[in-house]
Image 1 (tube, helix red, strand yellow):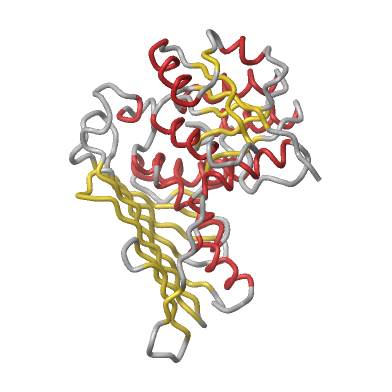
Image 2 (cartoon, rainbow, N blue to C red):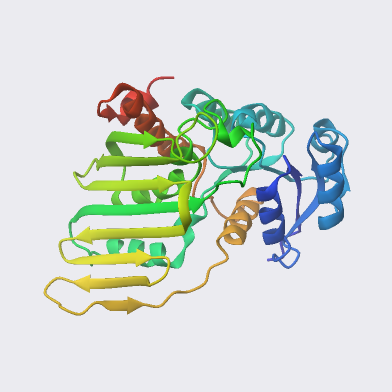
Length: 336
């Protein structure tokens, strides 16, 4: 079956919109960026020249263009509802950068309007597509891990000097919970994919290096509905980028870090095995999945409901930090 090119417009132009556009350039014509808009004329001009697309003068110009199938939305978190609602009501499918929103009310409203307008919403959680997590998931589903009991994860980056002062990512209003929401959310999603829904969260956070009023270091301790315990440490104040993810089952455990890759150890064995790392173009894979689903040839893996559930875990962690108590995730998800 021949599928026509899926034409999109990029909305909210920053460094991440470039990353997504570069992934689209690797799609061999499956997806094409035909237009772009942000409020800054200079950013529009730069993006349109770099990716050979039209420099739209307004969001309305994009939404009224019948040739555009979907919107890639990388606007700041607080603008997600307004922009996604406008796109959905114009019949445009939406690829939305995570988090889906800063609060549950907006997240539910985004999910609802996309469902009501019959447009496909995909939320940008590409980390779950990395080959080590797919290998772990397949082996969990095959029963090779046995009962899952525990997991520990760390996602860290050095963001000092990466954003200008006053940038929304530095502010509690723009990005509640700081690093826990912006990058920790990726591994919350992975933990939920592998160990199932999360029931309770305890959090701790500090601001140590970055300017602004937001945590740049945070840790979540979580209990899953199946009883398993997981922990997640996040940092924007580290010396370098680093990823770690260890998961423990009664029959097998697996250990991943950025430098050594994935290893596994079966119960009773003394020697771990190395698992081959397969490079996956995770961002392109998710964008292609969204395009296919929008043209009725598949489903998206992470839509509004899933994104709202992972958001509720981080918001429970933020509430835990503020109130110095364990928080039940249902308190958050049912708060709106």
